[in-house]
Length: 423
Image (cartoon, rainbow, N blue to C red; front, side):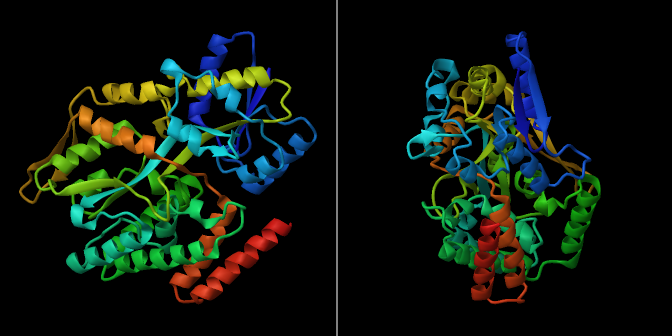
């Protein structure tokens, strides 16, 4: 028997456990979830309980490291080096080398994502840029050109920061793990510009509708949409195609959404649309999801390694729940499976009662190659750092609302993080 642990239930892991049990019926896999749905266990409480078990030698064998303190675990020797376990993944089991290289620290790999997301933006070509400052420039230009229009579909300071953070957080710390205050300051400056451009002259009903969605999300999910994964991965391509928002943005997590992006960009009236992977504050960033590691104290290292290889292998990668496959062969095949039939996006009816829809076609070889080239170019993982990010968001909101200066915000961030690290 060996144990798998994640803070929240993970469907990709559930699937992998089922496949593993079928392949190895004599080995029992126990799956522990730190924060069961509906429970009142906080992230901090779950991590304290987990760390106590690890220190006592009673911890899990496989850790799903999403929203866990990965850097701290690596520094404290909690995680086993995975390099040799991944060397045997070749042929149809091979993963993208770009992702392997990006996950290295001091030439060693301690964690490997089972799936990834790519932060992308799409819109009229003149408004699509690289780099956070250029994105802010573009937003201000779009606001001048499109007075009163909803540009991004996000109407809160935190929502704007949380979306753009996925391409910026890796720049907030130095190689030595120290806070890069200049990078954080630039993030606050540029996201304030983006927020101000989005909100300038925006219709009150748009803002009210966004707040209603946030409130409903809180009632149904115990968190606002601003705080949810859906803020980043929500597929608003229908809103873009229906022109209720002027820019499409998402953490691209499926080939079917990619098919929709490409098809909309070729539809009548959208021929000038362009999409790009959104590089914020440096690096070709990808979001690492279902991040796998093995406890250095594991007494079941061999089956744990087999489990991780299965997670990254062809069978499990053929169906993922939170992102694009890291397995190269499955990445290509996934387009055939996802896009083998024509479908359409239904946008509603126009003023004359006529149906408005956009046909969605399977991506062609050249378009698949474009996305694959983006995956092969990634070099910087975004791994959620809840403590750091929430401190930046809390102080960033006060800065954006004029309750404190930029200097005061950065100083408060430094102070709060110093207190947290000292505890």
